Image 1 (cartoon, helix red, strand yellow):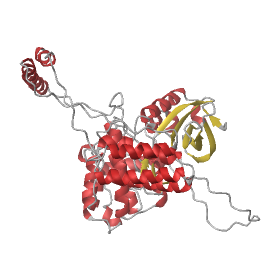
Image 2 (spheres, each protein chain N blue to C red; image 1 turned 180 degrees about the vertical axis):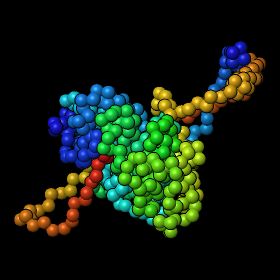
Image 3 (tube, rainbow over the protein chains, first blue to last red; image 1 turned 45 degrees about the vertical axis):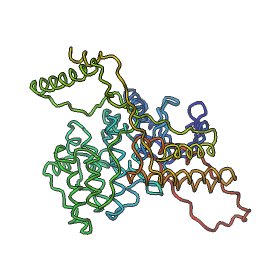
Image 4 (cartoon, helix red, strand yellow; image 1 turned 90 degrees about the horizontal axis):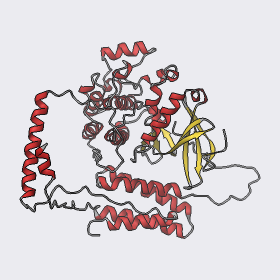
Length: 358
Length: 115
């Protein structure tokens, strides 16, 4: 491993961890003067050209996500033939490392995970590998979801289909385990499995092989949470079990809905999860299944659109001065500033400028 | 299609600007004051204090967002700017006097990566 990457821009400080697919280093971005984490593809995967390409492509898609509960992807490239991803450095621990939690601690973390997932889902990205190791928690209890896009790259390669699965299978949705289509509901199930384990100390299914897992999932018999941890309130148990429904259509329809259920169950305020943020939209919503609507549906819809259009068109031609639909609001962020002090001052001025009565 | 054309071809279409969203005064004022404190600490050269204040600002920002007190159009700018600010401030504690190799005191905190 060289001590710098990208023509000296990133100076490697030390290794942070080794995973099945990659090695993660702590590094310093010499250009932006900040610490970053750099994930370099493991040597045994470097020879797979298809995987390399997907690794970089998915990283670039993930780099378009910007949310407080998602690990930012800053950059991606290749060094000495090994692809790497430059990410936000998150000092702290994974959610797995602190083990079991009371519902008063677990639910706020789950709400943050829901917020991050909803943001990604709104942008058309499904994580596909939500598990404790991918949920990082800073010392101030801010949760960040790591590795968006990596799972999609991985699942298409034969090289990673063996060996990595059992460790993460506990969080795989039944449809994923069956090799069926993956949708946002998959992430909701996986998060539900993580929350179940946080609260009870064990994942929803205990198994020794994938075949055994598949059999248990087919039977759909999950031990009720309160049988394992009676202190969990009944509504929290209900919300978690809802997320763990075997059929995707019986789960909460979105991460935001799951969050609302959990928040209501815990009497906590739910974050404003339905993203209307200005994150760049991804080129396509790969998970979307446009329902095969009937001809009648389309005829009725087109007729309704035509009627509205005629009314609007006539109104405009007639010189009506009623305003058209409001333009979406665009807010400029504060100037970054040449120094951190300047950035802090700019932020302060920006906040006051956008304050009610400011 | 003709209907759509009729609608789209009208002259003199006027675009109304949506009302400008605002931050609640209490939230904006509290975060701005904290940001000022960060700038002041940096101006004094007290980078470690500045980092601590910036981290507090970050916690307060996230709490405000999670409490639904920050309109969605501000969330990304605010969250990313505060995150960037925290990452730019480097706290380098002053060198300790030589202790003849005796180490007492605190354990190093363990940091885990993103893997």
